[in-house]
Length: 352
Ligand SMILES: [Zn+2]
Image (cartoon, rainbow, N blue to C red; front, side, top):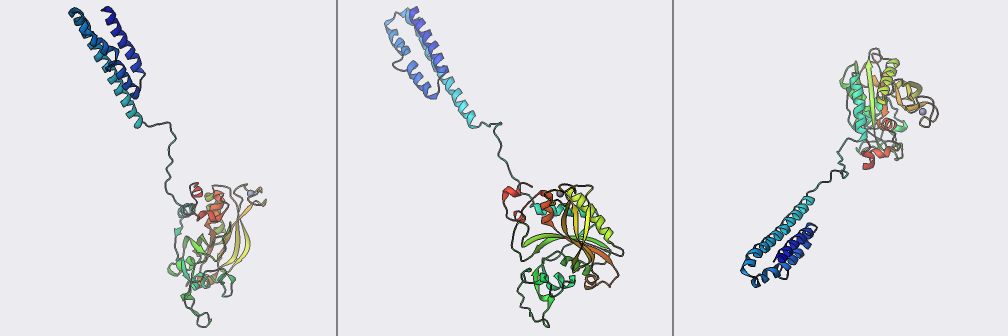
């Protein structure tokens, strides 16, 4: 009898060990093994009928308890395993690298335009606007561009169909239209409706009939500056330009240099250079060893432009410049191909 009790206790012990390391599939096999019809325990329970009443009373409950105990072990383990599976399903690995979310943002050209606008606004400039589709008068003639100037040529300018006569006697410049070739048209538009003194910048899109390469695009941006008053001089221009470029490039001792040049709309005219933003003027690859970088054209407003805008001759003085926005962005952010700005390549866009 003690022998049978001992055997039952042994069974429970073994069941406990095996259930502890079982998985779901194995648990069902263990259930059959320990509680099934051919199991040791069942055999013991069946053999009770051959025992004496006294023995039945003692062993019966032990065997039943063992049966309940083993069943409990299996059920508890099963619940544990199911809970674990559930936990793994909802598990978050906090150490796994996250998925990068990209926010939409402004194109680099728009960003640079805003930088420029902010610097000039702080210097007391107003931001003006002009039409992108302009007539021949405002884009060329009012700016003193001669009728035979190559800029007016079909090879340089996109002309819109207007049905206008090309016969000089009948030709009406105010009814001949083109996508503007520079932002300078806005000078005339502004002066037609405003009296000096004023300081404006005009950022905007321009169009030229050009083949694209790494430094040319048919569609590009300029920003025009125009300052007009009673006593504006080249010194004012140099001072404002120096302040602007020092701020824009973040180089306090940035120097400016003017070289004589020719533009129809300014007299005198100059090409404008700044000390190299890479080497500071010592000479490097970016400035081809010269220490200076070309920025664009500028000059004192030609009195003929004032007259075309409705001002009296020699009453006012002013300076004007037109700089390429792409060129400034390329210099500041080391972009080596102008076509990158507009081609939408995300690898480029996301860098800025
Ligand atoms: Zn340099």
